[in-house]
Length: 557
Image (cartoon, rainbow, N blue to C red):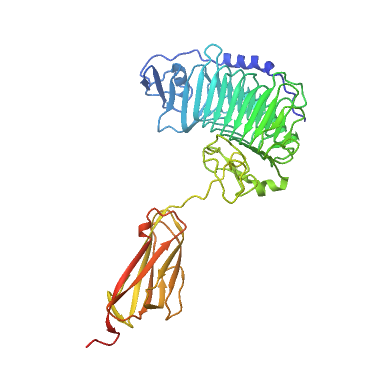
C-alpha cells in the first residue's frame, strides 16, 4: 500500500488549535498547605505522588503532577521529591500546559498515557507560554497528531527528554509541531514512535516554526513519509544528531518537502551538520535523506554521514539540495561533489566507517561509534564545534591520519585519543646482607606495587646488576624474566604483566660478588607500565652494599 498523500500544513493547523483549546483544565485548586519553595516572586512546586489526577489539592499530603501544573503560576518550576521514581499512569487524559513552566523529572519520572490519550499538549494563543521539559519520559500516547507531545503557540525546550512508544493515527508519532514560536530539542531521544501519515518521530508542519535538534538521537520510528523526521514547512537545524533505524514508505530517515505530491509553496529549510544518518529503510525510495517538491524547500548538509541505509541514501528530485562539503555518503555521488566530500561503496560502510550497533558510547544519547582510523576519521571540518553528540572533545587529531582542515571527524561521533590509564607504580628493594666479601653470594629482594587507582597494564621491572657482580639466578612469584648467562654481568628484565589496583609482586635476584674489599656495589631496579604515573619519584630504587676486605672463606691477618 502506498503512503498517504500529505495534506497542506495549513489544513492541519486548525485541528491542532482545536485540540489544544479543548484540553485546557480551567479548574484551580483551593489554597492550602502547598509543597513549594519561594524564590522572589516565583515558586518551585514539589510533586510527591505518582497518582493521577489527585483530589485537586496540591499539598504536603499529596501533590500530583496534574495538580502542580494547575496550581503553579506562570514562570514557576515543578520538580519531584527525591524519593519519587517511576511511571505516572494518566487516567484523566492528557496533561495540558498553557503557562510558562519548567518541569524537571531528573531522569527518574515517566508519564504514561497508557494508549488512552496524548501524553502532553503545550500552547495557548492567549498566553503563548515558554515551557521547558527536562529529564522526563513521555510514552504510550495515542492521538491523531502528536501522540507523545503536541506543540501549539508556545516556545518549547526539551532537554534530556525521551519520547517513546507513542502512536499517531495521522502525523507526528512522537512530536508534532504546529504554529510553535520555537522548539529546541537537546540531548533527547525520540524512539520507537509510529505515525500512519507523516513524521514517525517528529512532524513539523508550520511555516515560520523554527526547530533545532541538537545532540539527540532519533531511532526506530515508523511512518508513511519521514520515518524519523518530516518537514513540510518551517526551518529545521539538525546538529550533532544520530538518525538511525527509522523506516517509512518514502524517506526512512528525513523528508523535507512533499516528494511526488503537490508542492508546498512555503517549503521547509533544513540544515544538517555533523550528524549521522544510517540504517534507515524506505519501501519506495529515499532511505536516508529525501528532498522533494518544487516549492521553497532548501536542504544543506555539512560534515555529515549519510550511509548504510537500506535503499537510496540521498534522493533529491528537485533543486535546492546542496552539500557544503566534508560529507560522507553511499550513493550520494550526484549530490556530494563539494570540497572534502567522501564517497564510499555500500559494503565499506560498516567495515571502514561505522560500527553497526547503535548503543551507549558515553553521553546522554545513543550513537554509532566510528571505526578507528576509518574513512570518516580526521576527514571532516567542523569550525566552532568543541564537542560531539556525546559531549566529548572535538576535534581530536589522530597523528597517524592525514587531516582535512581542522582534523574533525565526519558525523556525530568524534574518535578520542588513547585514554590515559592512571596508576602509581612503586618499586623497593632489600638485601640479605649489609656487608659482603669477594666470592660471596648476595640476594636482592625486589617488590613492585600498584598503588592505583587503576589497573596497570604491561608492568616491567628492569634490574641493572651491580658492576663487580655476576648473575646467579632470578626467582619471582609471577611473570617471566630474561637474564644474562650465569657468571656474567648485565641486566635482568622481569615482565610482571598486568597489575590490579593495590596488587604487588616480588622477585629475588642472586649475584656473586667479584670485587675486593673497601669498596661498594650498587643494584638499581626500576619499574614501568602502560600508564600515566603521577609519581615518578618512586619508580626506581638503588641499594648500595659495602664490600669488606678479604674473600669468602678467608680472613685478613
